[in-house]
Length: 64
Ligand SMILES: Cc1cc2nc3c(=O)[nH]c(=O)nc-3n(C[C@H](O)[C@H](O)[C@H](O)COP(=O)(O)O)c2cc1C
Image 1: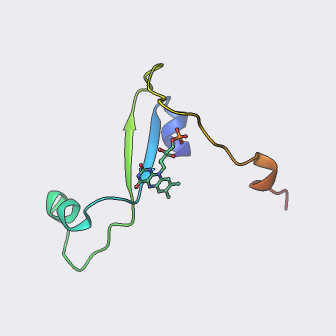
Image 2: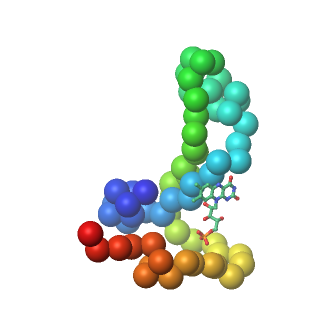
């Protein structure tokens, strides 16, 4: 997703999807696992419908 942002696109991770249908769509073996679907596209300036929640970066990023 960081690489996608570097290409000036936006993305959205989703865990809530029909894994069987995604595997059929991708012709992936039924024994495989699809852990996430990521949509990619160009941002619509009116595309944010609700208030966004962000955890403060200080709680996520740590210098090691
Ligand atoms: C690992 C992960 C899985 C997610 N799965 C879903 C999902 O299945 N359905 C959904 O509506 N949002 C899902 N989200 C949240 C969206 O990606 C998105 O962050 C959310 O709609 C809020 O939008 P915003 O990031 O612009 O605030 C997931 C987020 C993460 C990090």
